Length: 334
Image (cartoon, rainbow, N blue to C red; front, top):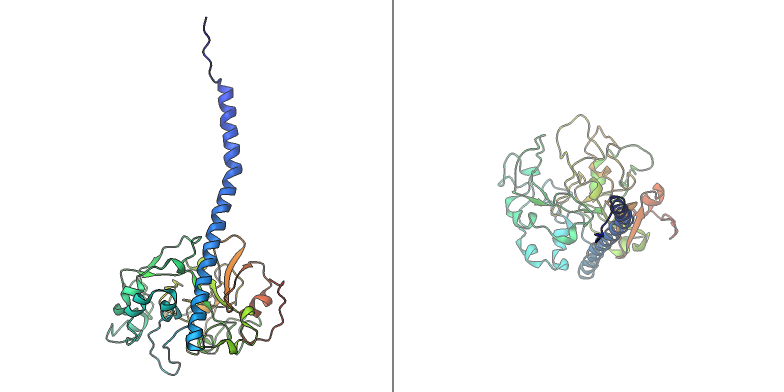
């Protein structure tokens, strides 16, 4: 009599259990390996930006300001970000050529009512272009922002089919004089936040290596903003409906509301709602942040990239966000 060989039900269940255990053991390792690769790519993105910044400095003897073309003494600006003027150094000369440098951001010929807060259609080719090195692969945000927000409180006015966003922003500093970061008081002086700050870049005033009294190796230039790139303010405006209500971080423009502009008022990856101001828009309270476990990648002004833990001492953090604060910070402090 022949006996057919096969698995018993118990043996089958044991095999399934073993496979399940192996998957449970291997899956975190696979996920960790993938995150390590994504973090390495994010680091490479920032290094590429660092090379572009220094190539620009070699040509112009200064880094670009946060909002090139902005005139602090006037009310008009093309509002372009420093990334636009860096496009040639980022091997994107055709995009650079496509930008209309003669058209200001609030040109009434674009829209007499809402022009002060919209992107001119003449910039649509560039503004709708996604660039891989402007986006951290660990972030899962929508690559486009589809609505321009008007200055009269409306947030549903379509301007372009799509606006490409970025997960990186320039370090604006601790708030300028008077320093808003000595305590928990919100930054009320928006003008200082824009034009008289102590970080890597101001709105209208560029800085060269000679201006970094603290040293370029001790000053943050660019950081990730993926954590707070989901349309929520960290510094909430009270009592007014005007101004932008989301930090969409379109890479082609810089705004004091936090778009391509961040500071160390709040620690990395801080939850929304801290730093409420009743005297003006304080999107500058928006924290740097990332989807990487435990911290954020930062590009320093010397071109190096370092990973900062979320638990970094707040005074140390603010110290490395100033270019001329004369802080004494050891290399092992972060």
